[in-house]
Length: 329
Image (cartoon, rainbow, N blue to C red; front, side, top):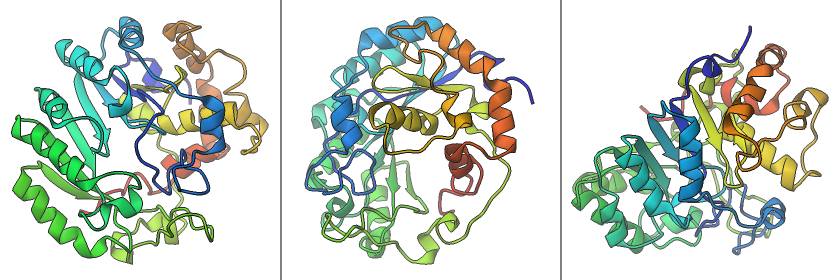
């Protein structure tokens, strides 16, 4: 019991959602509307566009003197779509903070990607297939542009991993893509065990079917339940959403976002709601230290709620094997 271990030590990691803008309309993504023809979900329309600026990053960093590494990913956007993306990456590297970038690779130019190839930068390119299959899930991306960008980054000395989500439509080209990754100089080719089933409402965009069992995360076809192991608690980390709200992790951040911009879509019980309604989460209107302290004060309530499995998002993501068993080894 007691206070979140993460907040009794200094925060060394931060996960930034630099923007909620993206060039893609992936069917399983929460930003994508019911019709995948480039439509946005209601909460996205309600929220409007948000970006974390270089100035914002400097402000947050001023409260986190022990920051060692940052992850640029988020729930709804691709970091490369953020206005200050380039400046922000260089700022972190100049301050000896390691940077992990998660991207679909389809944005910006080969020249810009070459400029990202600095010591301390790791780029995770999410590419789910070859020229004939990647766009079936990564709707709106152009495979040739992705390859040009990845090649420019790697050829300039950048360290890149190819992350692959298998589906029924791309399972047959996994070996081909693994060879391409090796030939191009990717440091690794990692196949995620998928749990994504896509947007399968009849008449709403492409139907995304699951791959064979070999490539499927067990949680899809077997209800595995284990004690909640809070990922954040083990990594001393905070999450910064594109609108400036601070949460312990991206999953809690996602719930906070949807509660804020689409209140009718999710039912919250009192235990869950109590985390979100009695303090200001935004670093733009409240100091980061004060926000973190507000979470500290809730540490015992959180842990009690884990024991009683009261927070669905914690049960789902850190109370089964979904995240403990993500990659095909």
